[in-house]
Picture (cartoon, rainbow, N blue to C red):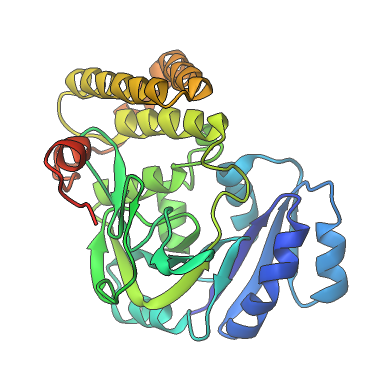
Length: 326
């Protein structure tokens, strides 16, 4: 079974200089690719000069995470894809437990390793931590991270566990599964497209697994900081996209409740004087309404399976009941 590590890059020469050497040193089982999203810096030149053994795939435009990977992976022949962010530090033997799982368990379709914070290595990282779940209304959370409450890594998640979604920061998927699912939804551009893909996998009875014996460290926010209103816009919009396409049950009631909860989030932004983020939520809703006919068409051709959520409302559990708090 052959594995390809595919790093998507856009004007990320400094990140490549920092993190690519470890990928090359600790990934002897893999073929390494860099998929470049039409960078205007010297990224491609840097790779050619310093790592001639790397295969460079030059995309014609910056189509974001979704289109960037869709375009690039057409040219990758290996059996397993590892989609690796350019701001991830890998560790020695990080690939071995992943490959073992894929070889020994044919029902495993998607895998995520343990993701710790590069800036504070004793703690889990926001984007993925120890594997993702979702609530009834489409709000994502992780083992090791709920909202902004992030757990210290005390080896409590050194296990193997079935999860609902795997982080796009370090995302392993069988090539056959990626093709069967039709790849990422390019209307997302970036953020939460991996949750949409994992949800579609769940609706096809495909398994997503967390492997705690494999560890990577993620910087996070290399493209968009958490404080950037554009990130708020994409997260709120794409979450609504994902919920509409994939959730089972009474869609009208789900969306209506979700819009009310987003309104509560906007009030919280108001109290913290994050006025640009309130505008971002509003723009996300306007984009959602504009795209609703297309989303409903996509929903019509997709399966929707019950039992997708781990809890009915993570907002209620965390803020009202006080669960999941460190």
